[in-house]
Length: 178
Image 1 (cartoon, rainbow, N blue to C red):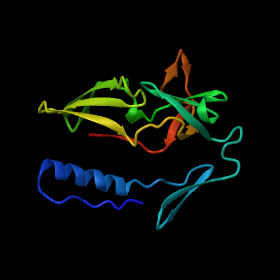
Image 2 (cartoon, rainbow, N blue to C red):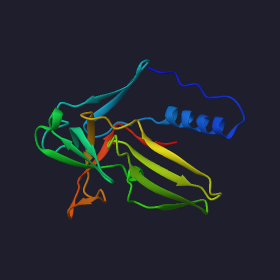
Image 3 (spheres, rainbow, N blue to C red):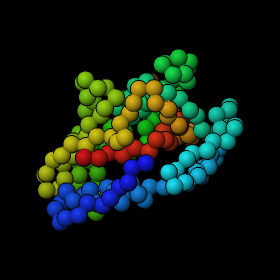
Image 4 (cartoon, rainbow, N blue to C red):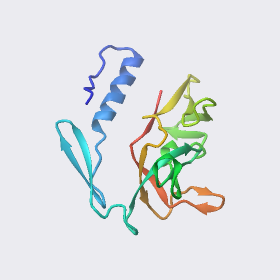
């Protein structure tokens, strides 16, 4: 377990890092259908019910193979074996959702790019209303064959070859950071 301490100082970077640390500390996974969260002195554990991954239950476990604009390509077995499972990314991580966003009357602009050397890494270029520009990446990074827990929902908003996806990434929890 890593101890997170809020940075001191008055710079914009220190203020940003304090906000990130507070955000990480405040992220609390809640109990859901087929799983319970147990908090210990060593961190949070996800305890799955014995039927969590059986047919008809809302959770699915698969192994990451590749990362696309709006979805993940996973397999039911490590190393790419078993059936392919397409899992929609969480809405805030999708690259085609929007190239701009208005927050409190200010418009922010986004550009997305996949890393040529490490195809599991995506970059997002952000321009703020004052035209400052910076680059963000998804953290924690996607890792080949990592376990992806997804939830079965009817409308993820993502389609692949005109087929709507019904699985959305649930864990691990990810976000853009720069």
